[in-house]
Image (cartoon, rainbow, N blue to C red; front, side, top):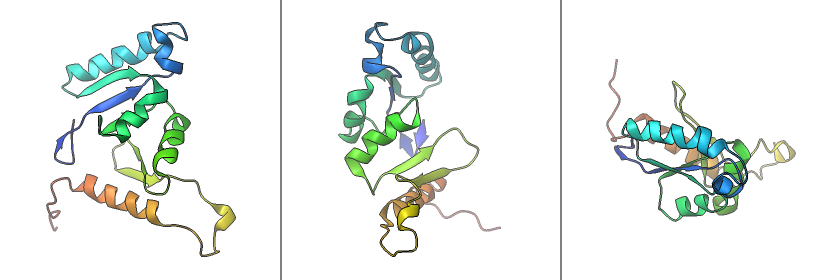
Length: 142
């Protein structure tokens, strides 16, 4: 997958604890996730897994991977928020448009009080712009 002008290395987290330990904790990894990964690899996508969800996010944060795909929302957000709350960005893939969002909730409890930190919003907007224009080229003017 070519993203931001280069191929990215993608890891996939397993659904079950320890990616099911070869079926000890579930069959989703063997029956669903691993075949999907192989299909993607056949399409030329640099993706590996499924990896144990309790460690793969740290490996991604350390640079072993460019992206980690989680099987459900909170699986990813717990790890991401623990590692980089306020500066990380949520990206939804597979849509016909670019969708990025902040790494936190709506913060209704502090709305209008002038205490919110905008760093995650700025990071989300910057990443959306980079994804829309991966090679730093100006969009055509119509």
